[in-house]
Length: 200
Ligand SMILES: Cc1cn([C@H]2C[C@H](O)[C@@H](COP(=O)(O)OP(=O)(O)OP(=O)(O)O)O2)c(=O)[nH]c1=O
Image (cartoon, rainbow, N blue to C red):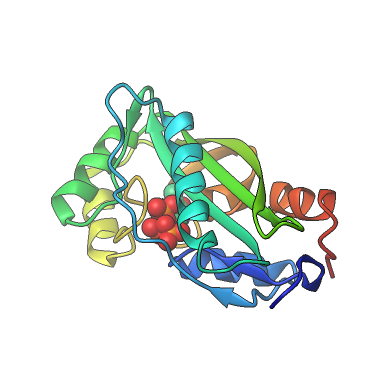
């Protein structure tokens, strides 16, 4: 039976970006265990609330399988006003996202949840919400179509990936860059160290 002092970190995510980001700050999870959830927004749910709720649900879903471990989960939401943009899964959807984002500022909300193991075998929950503002240049039809052809939008919230070709289309960003990619590293490090998890 494991004890909370072992500092085993489980990343509750299927996103290779999140694993890469954790490794970037020298953290290698003991396990990567994605949650399988319905990510449909609730009626009237606002983007920041959606990001934190999904991160919480991912963490709680995975925690049951890992007593005694630290659980880290996150959710990235791209929002245009009150509207939550989908994770693009077709060219049409990606094009709709890019048309909406073109020439405008939007917000990226990162919900992060850490479950810290407790002596009684349960977990104590800590949550963070991080906001990054992003402005796209006004996109010409040719720029949009060339980005669509790259395929980089697949499975990405808002139909773009700032860590790839979309970087050339982004005029300005205010706030955490890693939050847009999928995990706000400054806040994750703060959460972990604040609860006594040893950082490298
Ligand atoms: C905006 C943006 C999103 N993304 C990605 C990060 C996330 O993987 C994805 C948002 O979807 P999420 O639901 O947050 O994550 P996921 O389904 O990929 O993985 P899991 O739920 O198992 O943790 O979009 C980028 O990689 N770059 C970007 O610039």
